[in-house]
Amino acid sequence: MVMSREEILRDYKSAKNRRRQVQILADLNCCSRAEIERILDLEKPTDSSPAAGAETEERDPFEAWLHGRLDSMDAEIKALEEKYRKYAAALEALWEYRKGHKKHEQGS
Image (cartoon, rainbow, N blue to C red; front, side, top):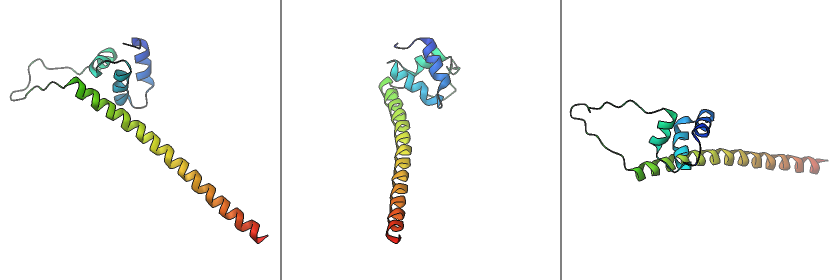
């Protein structure tokens, strides 16, 4: 564990997307999502006996890690896409400004 319990709690509480933050904290601390959930006291109550006919499936830790990384990357990509759109809009506004400014200079 890289972070203290208090740091994990503080990061989680200040996160905009707490669901994704759990996996981010797990990645940062090189531990499982379940371990972070235990620290945050987010463990879902488990029924000791599965429902009739239900099969219990244990998730592969590596698969869980991959899913977490994909979720984290998805959030990063969405943030970058938003920045890209803003920069593209600013560039377009600059082009429009310059085009109008040149017309104004030619008309004078």
